[in-house]
Length: 85
Image (cartoon, rainbow, N blue to C red; front, top):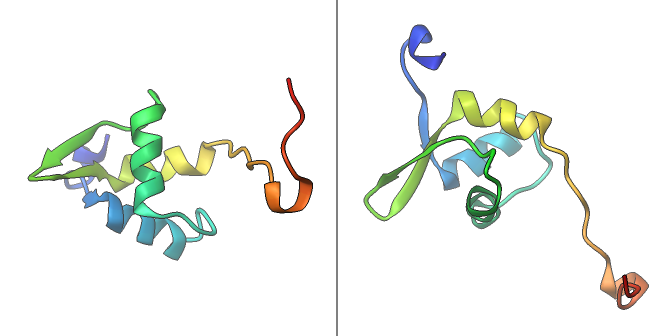
């Protein structure tokens, strides 16, 4: 897919987080959160290890984050502990 348009646009998780915010895809995100999502979500785009860092194709990651459903956490500072399930 991306190769037909001149090859992949590989970016580090830090650069991915910066671009997602700059492009208005998400309001805020850190590279640590990107790393956590990559570890926990099997649908996350394929990554490549470069040294001690990971890189992902921005042309694949941007649509992933556009479609991704977010689930806000429970605000313990406002609501106290969450109810038992």
